[in-house]
Image (cartoon, rainbow, N blue to C red):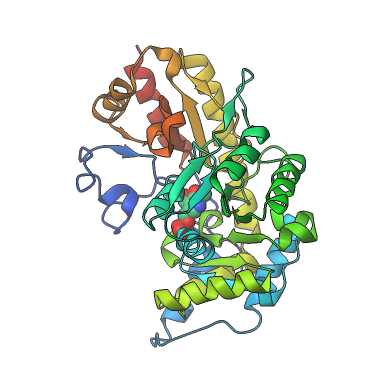
Length: 392
Ligand SMILES: Cc1ncc(COP(=O)(O)O)c(C=O)c1O
């Protein structure tokens, strides 16, 4: 059996497939005819091995309560070993219906109402939502955009914020959405050492770990035993294989006390088993998806290069931040002379594009736009042409 779904140029009509990206524009306040490059899912068909495994399971026709059996864990572990040089243990694993759900569980398990939780804005907006929606407060160690166009961590501010706010929990985004940084081992060590020193638990959201273009993804928990002991590592096949609606993620918590608290929160939320389709998809993806994954990655890498060249040549005043990781590009429009409102208005109503406006990632995201480039190149070109149109 060979992989069938390797034509990433093919434009697939996703309308009327119940998909958030295309079918809910008007409901979400956008014009009907916007071209969507916002939410982080891909416009590619997933691996045919996953399609086949799901089809076979669906044909069984019974969808009662399910759970994993051998070799689920072995397959997940082998992917981590193969791609991330990290070997998690079976007892560390807790499966959740999504990474954001896991973030919420962690906030509830490791902090009390009124506590402050640390993150690094601009960052994936559900990070702050799971904090404030659970009656906690956001404290941001804002990332610093340097002259050379890369984002850096202000470690002095990081430590001071921990001390000044009695921080017990830090939500790390690694690789970072939306700024595209792949944190180096040295940076992660500095973060970890500070957190160990001050007794801070680190939730490391590594959902973008399979999209690294420059450098190597370092699993925070894999750096040293002390880091494993204070961390919750969030992984999922959902970004890598375009399986977001399968609602499955693999969360690893080596420390028994942290694991128990997390599990208790899951019990309180009334969650025990997950959907069998997510389990089947995960196994198929990690066991047989390598060929598709490699081809998809090459395609997306070329899209990023295409976008970079396009922006440099055709979008005056716009700077594309170096995309070291993720399939989300981060464009700085602040030199265009447009206000945040003018920019958003032009993008939506003149270019007819549905992007993620930088402001939703925090104050420091204002004047930026995030574009999902995991789409056929022709679609990406169309989107960039439309942006060019509004800047003339
Ligand atoms: C950093 C990050 N975490 C989590 C998610 C979503 O995870 P899930 O759909 O599993 O809740 C995303 C999706 O874009 C993301 O970028």
